[in-house]
Image 1 (cartoon, rainbow, N blue to C red):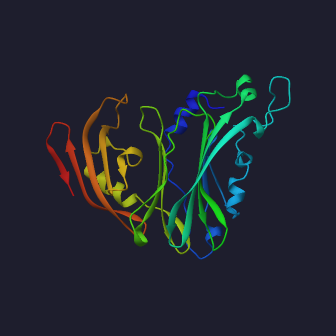
Image 2 (image 1 turned 180 degrees about the horizontal axis):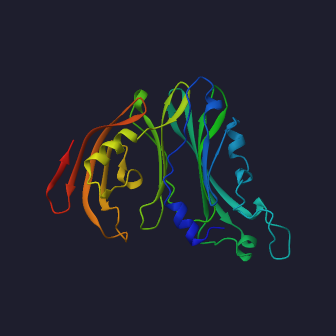
Image 3 (image 1 turned 30 degrees about the vertical axis):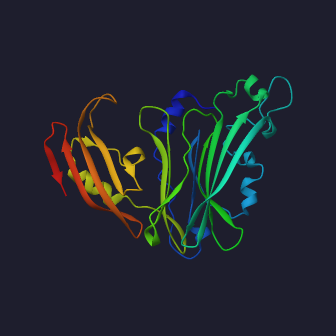
Length: 280
């Protein structure tokens, strides 16, 4: 199960999404990205009907974090029947002809799981999955999965589509509940071949040039505002020895999406003393 150290470490990860290669064979090029207690894994996705993904979904717990098969109070081992699942299936939208479906699970442990000390009734687990129609008909692959089998760490938000036309972006953002500003997130653009991770390199590169060399900023999570095509982050000294100290300024940037890349429109750094910084 999740120790506090693991929960803090995993909760601070930036989940960048899924990297796809080009080519017409959409299902053969991409890798799905799954985050569990044991870290990040990438697999070659296999297409299934939508019902396959939503029927008895706990069977897809490949990490073992639900403790299925483990002893419980001298009786039968823990099984998926020892959990109650609330499932919400919703259509996010369609991009470049590919239907996108979101599945969110809330997983409530039963008395046998709780009595065995494997989970708490106050903190149900949560899963989030993004499924993409990889070809016409009832054929879906999973591009993104977030599995937190012990709750209290993540806040599951709905994925959304930002923008219209060929430069529209699918985004998912799930903040952790600590004060470190960590999150799980991912952003993709689509063409006829499928989904591709948005390249934020041009934007972060421009910001790196604008902030002082001794400063660092948050490139994603709460700082990124895809609906407004903006990024706003405090700038902290790289050698700061605590979360609340060493803040030297703020950076604000605007960008546009062009063929899957976040291209900077403007970048402005302002020092904490109120003096204007560089504007590009």
